[in-house]
Image (cartoon, rainbow, N blue to C red; front, side, top):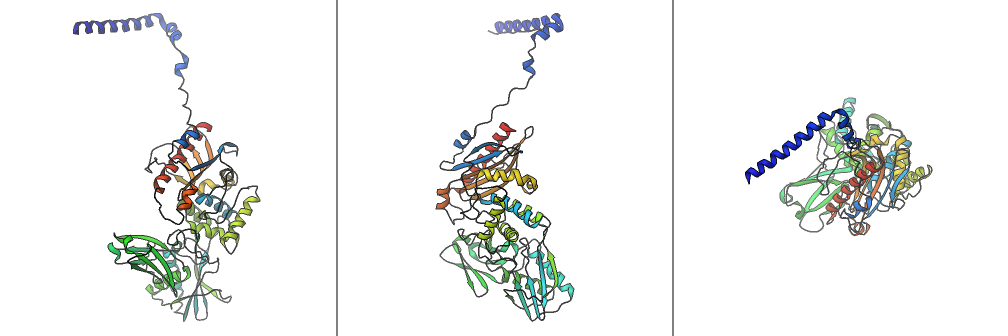
Length: 478
């Protein structure tokens, strides 16, 4: 067998050499006649998968998928259920951003003041949604530097904005993203709870980067049974009962604050005492005395910076606060109605807004309107600079490689996953889109639950579908 195979190889080799020699002897004309120009062209791009196929393969049986896709000139390229009113979740913050920028201006700041009237010192909130303990420490330094002595009374005023007990009554009252609203806010109206294994060593801190004093007006008590968290007020003190079964291992979490004025006053008192200035126990006043004069104060960052932080971290309190500032209304329903009217005056219909953060289960808008707003007033106001770069992931939630670039706003509730913004790929153009994925029956069944069964896997799959859809649109229309 070996001799025969060697002969075969020699024959093939001789044939190839002969063919090469024939090509060379024929000259350039022979080579030109044999060359097919089509071979030099790149192969045609593979058509991107159609949305229907991607939705069918997403593993989201029972979910409703609505979307609208526009080009940069505002032309509708594709839509599915684009005019169906849906719950926008935190994508509503896109509208809040544009509304606040128009009504307040990008350079607007919110001032927290220390004021004095006779023997009373007043910590007067200016509705700064991002004031933290480090900011209050700076204010305490400024106050001590003025040389003012200890007053007989120390009061806190938060009347710049209406007092609202919680953003969304439909949400669980122990969720840190559902705190009270007031003109005097601190640490996003949250307090940091820590514990050792078994529930020992409970601590509550007004935690910030450089300062984390104890929060004396909020207490936590371990209990043997009942709900995981239960809240009540006793006088001026907030008390949280925490079920020991949730504290088998050492851990921590943020809890919402329901009495923000007294919380901020308590922390400011502690910070001043550490600097040698003794303040009496804080009291809350409903009206700021007209004759009170400013002793010192600090300003928030400009609104543009506040809004970028809101869009990146999706802070609900910030959204409601800037919306209330922009509308001047005294409750969230009226404030949301004012924002809705502002958009309707520009020709955008199909809105039913009940808040500024998207937490309300009753807020509704359509994918078409959201994409139109991003394309129209959004581009005019430079909305892209407020959008977050959304990283790619696979269907299991793990970080995934890819060239797709998403500059968008996410929106997530239980069994609701939304995405709206800009999508692009190298070598292609750009699309503007809004995608709303929801399973409202499962959403309704899990109302008030923090992490219902199946929601994590469902959300991963919905987010992966959003990426696949956007990638297919960019490749098809870009």
